Image (cartoon, rainbow, N blue to C red; front, side):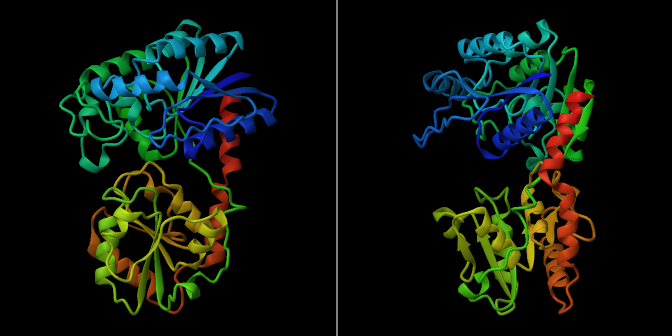
Length: 403
């Protein structure tokens, strides 16, 4: 089969997933082309490395204009027409038989042009949804605010200032545009990383398509118990409670860790947060160990291994791989019942409490770490994580291609 995969970018979690699926499919004899946009980054750093089989479409100027216009009008997906037509022309020349879509919501592609090509040529479509953007009028997530306007058409959006932010509220119009573009495809399979997201898809206008759940995976040869002197270096004597995130804030539960640091006995517990910055550190109480960044995956694996408990008080998440990373390093997980976060947690791996129930969270921390005889066996945790090895997940995608 000749397959084209399209994602906003070629890096980050979704970019790596796209490239790794492509590699797995090539190993089984398929021809796979991958595509991402040439996006203008506010940092000024443009990352377009040469990648075998990968093509960058559009140019920085068109992406910048799309983003500027989109952030004013809310028409995210209605610009970049020339760049998208060139992309379609290239895929036509390559005689693409199937398109595998990933994220499309970074002001990077013209949706009507792309989906007209798909429908006109009866292209088979696989679409991995990494969030909820495809069936809302604007936002990738709505769980934290309990919004259900996406079911009936959006409008008066409470999150128009949230990524991908916009000045004008055109969410009702964009919901209709997406519904028109995304429905009426002859052969499309929706893939989600969690049962939670699959359930939402079935309630949306995408519910007319078959939905397949393929969980995110991790590299279990990298995420593995890794002993170090982390506790000694940082003077940690008692139990170590760990949190890891990129972009700490309310949605990631920063306020929860602040509360934990204040309420847990300091002579018994030490809170360690990874992925912090200046703004984060200003909110942290005394005694919290802040690690702004790690130098390598190996170093982060060492920190996971050093912890007694990994706590993930996320308030909205599709399927957080940080839970899996901790488990693969032999550390149990305690998380809120949010989105897909609880789905990989069984009684051998950790515990789940209701979102925002701080009292229950503290009780579980004390229960899970309070005994000299640990409740969770490290070897069992590592064994359980083997089922989430990324190579198994990528081959599930190829199996789907071949059915």
